[in-house]
Image (cartoon, rainbow, N blue to C red):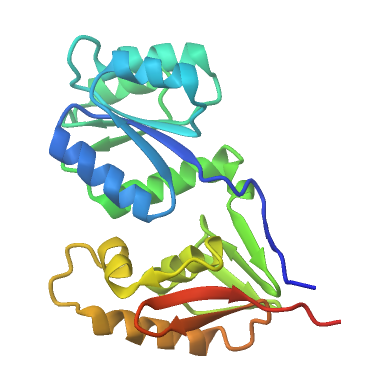
Length: 238
């Protein structure tokens, strides 16, 4: 019998980003997509509310200085729409009154620009934990369980010491069993902007992941000669 992948709420969490600075919008969307989220980026409040009519989001990130309707009003309307929806406000306004106004209209968190993407990720994960969404971000394959909010991988009760990139690579493979990923495709997704890395970097990381997960019984990351790598689920043993 084949080992099964089980995940609580296995669909990607959906984030909505409202940011009229197009380069920043694209940068944040790209980064968060690489962290395993499904992200829709829009440029104004009107687009945001149209999106929300057709999609249920787990968290919203909004700039303050938006055309037509500002981020404070967006947050106020979002809070009326869904009292439980986590909202993060991004702004260049760092004064006390602006923060007070943001929290008064119902935001959950407040970050000032320029935005450090890793810090944004920490705030997102913290909000998702507090809102109870954390329970939806676990994936189990055989005797391995991965939790994307705590960034932990546990095999038979023992935590595996993975770097962030190793964790993201392994989670990506386990989420797409049987799919072949070329080295170039993996480089583009996990090494974007790292000019010092080469295709050989992928091989080095795969070797490290294989060594660290050698006691995991539910899968194997195999080499597809001339193409790249794929995750193969192992047969469950009695």
